[in-house]
Length: 356
Image 1 (spheres, one colour):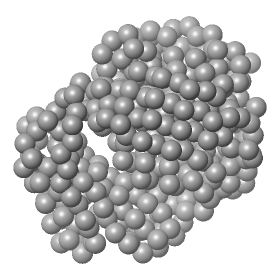
Image 2 (cartoon, helix red, strand yellow):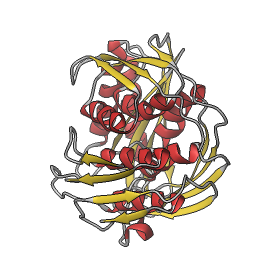
Image 3 (cartoon, helix red, strand yellow):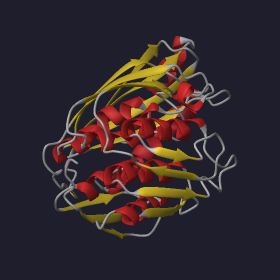
């Protein structure tokens, strides 16, 4: 049986490829993805998507057709269940050209299959660690993984080197400990009191005053909003220049993350304001799950044994699309109560997936 996926579905981005291929490995079902990233300015597979396909193929001995840059169609047939082990994945090597493709997105592809592989896996991932349109390393460490921990997901993440777009060159060490039983459902409806907002304004291979200005601006904005904030300036080493801000809101029952990256011609104050405004929008709504976290946890809740419920401050097209892709592979029941762009509540009746 081959699952057919339209890559232009919904938000039409690389998330469709990542989720579909991860589920292909988890279920053993072949998948054909057409119209990959059809609505993007540069449609087809970009280097980071190609790297993800090749990495997944390596862990399950898959037969793959269409795995080339700019390809609009991929046929993927797993040859075996995911195999645990020690892996080194360099996005530039896998894609055949230099790339600051996001290592956090590469891990998103690999995490589900290796979590159920029956033994521990140790990954070295090389590429971009802080790249636009992808979760930064801090988000993975401070928000996503702590949120998934109560389900049974046990992952150690260590950032060895920072890598900004376009140079990349960052590196992360990841240890994925296998689950021995189905994941546990979670309830994320009441976030509780805001305990603190912590974070850093960061500059790499740039003057120190940039990091200082970003962190000072963010501190002032959040304190004016009467939020308990501690934002520090940090200079880091990287193969190329970069700047940004990475904020984590610690509530009694959950966490939420917000970030913004600098670029040439973008004032430091604008970088700080972008992340702070997103945080304040989420905080005012009162929801437990931030908009980016909602779609990132969905696959794991669909695999859990039982019903999970969470409230998000914004139903995104990414969330809606990810739900559609998951439904194509799994009999999980996913109900999204809320319109796109508005707050919503999501209920997921998981299937209780176990190791192969």
